Image 1 (cartoon, protein in one colour):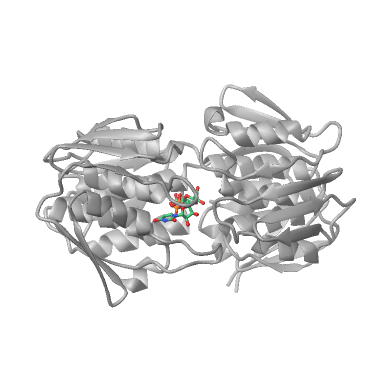
Image 2 (cartoon, rainbow, N blue to C red; image 1 turned 90 degrees about the vertical axis):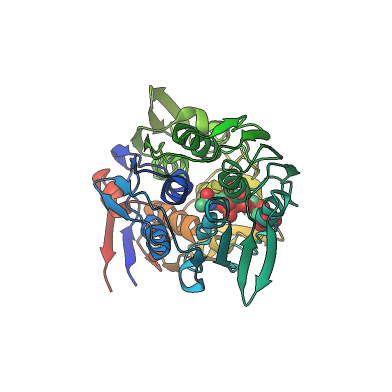
Length: 421
Ligand code: UD1
């Protein structure tokens, strides 16, 4: 298991190119592989472990899929296996995305029930609610979801869960509805940009979709979809993370190729915290002329502040002036990074789904452990600013979502190296 060793305290300076979005690429690759009756090519796909894990799942189903130079080449498959086994699904929850498209195209899917993970319980009841509304019969057997339907029928259903809309359930049911017979209306749909991208991709394949990016998505079912060519959008969470890297080191970093309009809530909070961000087209320059102010935040579904940027924001607040409250409303147990940050000298008090962070003058390097992808990035950020050496273990979590992280950070002057084990 690799580790990252970081010697902190250097102000980062220079440019970082933002990679393609992982969370947009995953459902698009699934749609291409399972729903397309001809070949697709998807460009700007990041070279990440999660992408390779998904390729493994699709290959297991019989999809011909190759990755080279940022492009996924996805073959057309007239017949596929409809079973996604535990051994593959447990590695990445997004594997459950294959359920809706397999069911829509082949009338049957048997997909392992994904487990929980380090950020807390992650049920799939909303995914199943949507499939049932589309006419599927669902059984849970031996740890598997068995879904069957001769032909899905369009329906009107509501995907509101206890925490609001679900990105995964929206993507999964949308990929089922595009081949269902008749009209579907998904209410309380997730509005995340990744859903709008999936809908754009499906539309290019021949689907008829209206309203993606709003709370109500309408779909007119079609009988067949063709392959197409697409470019994944920039990763808005990676962009937010590198803005935080520039800010936490009081550096002068330019991030290249970001999508400003997808980052409103993050940019709003950073600006309130007196972090300066100047845009030229799709590039953003981050500087901290006056010091960072503590500002409360609460995570919410899009267009609110993303839960995927909460850990990185907490790292930043550890070194801000004053005290703030961070409320995690999406994955309420997602505070594992707080304990590790405390080991570096941060002052954080967690009560349930809330954390109060009191800024300190400095952090000190320590051996710490990444518990999930974004928590891992928070520890890297803290390490970049801390005095002395920080060694982050379980880097495989970070590799799931950050392409060439040590290379990108070293290029802007960070003292960071990977210890291979
Ligand atoms: C996706 C993202 C993840 C991000 C999350 C929230 C991908 C691959 N992953 O995950 O990075 O943190 O959105 O923005 O894009 N819920 C239910 N029942 C369900 C499904 C979800 O109650 O059937 C709850 C979840 O427990 C959570 C909330 O809904 O509290 C949002 O989860 P969801 O949007 O589904 O997250 P994912 O799609 O798993």
